[in-house]
Structure formats: structure tokens, C-alpha cells
Amino acid sequence: MKNIGQTVNWGIIGCGDVCEVKSGPAFNKVANSKLMAVMRRNVEKAKDFAQRHGVPNYYADAAELINDRAVNAIYIATPHGLHREHALLCIEHKKAVLCEKAFALNSVDAKEMIDAARKNGVFIMEAFWTKFLP
Image 1 (cartoon, rainbow, N blue to C red):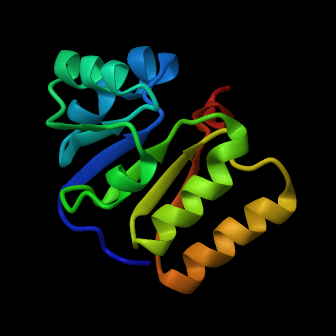
Image 2 (cartoon, rainbow, N blue to C red):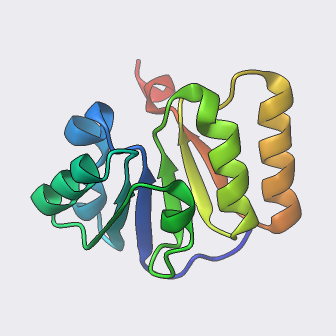
């Protein structure tokens, strides 16, 4: 898999309620991790999130965030039906992907996402931490 460098510079596609209390602030609290950009369809809400969490860039379009050169990994936290589309776009642009659960709507979509990541040498993973709980 492609080495994304010493520091993971994150972008979030879909900075809604889940990111507000769980994932978003954590990206700046982990060593070698920095939240560089967020995206939400409502640009004012994206701007608000970015300002409150010290994120330098914000967007209303996923493609703009994916094309941000400062970002080398993307957390996808959009509605499930958009995971495949966003993951494939990230992979096409050689960005590592952490995709919120449910990873995909079905096994065909999941296989397509994994195959694309393998073909392009890009890391992809489902954000499913609860399987490690007792």
C-alpha cells in the first residue's frame, strides 16, 4: 500500500453530528495526525465546524476537498448511499480512505471499493471500532 507519509493530514467528507462529538476533534489529538479540511453540503455549517475545531480549510463539495493537496487521507462520514461514490473518487486521487460504517450498501459495492484500492495501491478501511469491545 502507498505510504501516506509521517503525518496523516485528514479531510472529512460529511462533518455532521457524528463528527462533531466523536471523530472530528479526535483527528487533532492523535500524534502525527492533523485535520486539514472538512466538507459539508452546507458551506456555512462546514465553515462553522472548521472555525470551532481549528480546521484551516472547508468546502461544500467533496471533489474540492479531495483535490486539496494538503490532504492525504479522507474520513468518509456521509450517508451510507454515498460511501461508494466518495471512496472511489478518493481512491482515484490516491487518497487513503477511512470509511464510516456501514462500509457499503452491499457486497458488490464493497468489493468494487476494495478492488479499486488494491489496484491503485491505496489504503482503505472501515471505521468499525466496536468489534474490538468485549
